Length: 95
Image (cartoon, rainbow, N blue to C red):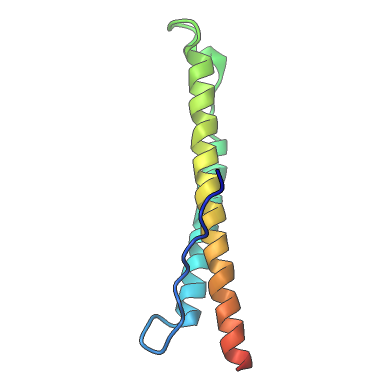
């Protein structure tokens, strides 16, 4: 199932400036990349699960991977919205 297109803000005189939106999306992207790196740096190692039921390490690894996938999906959405707003900004400058 294909995801629906994201609805980016529409730049207009009464709304938030294109410059502000571009900056906000760029900052959100930077912060999400840092969050992804931080989560990637969390140690999920079998030795930390050796005193609990079998299989919990594999569950923990799967959960860690799922967290990273979610963050990467959000980053992809934010970058898509950033690109759409940036394109609007460029179009307005050309007009």
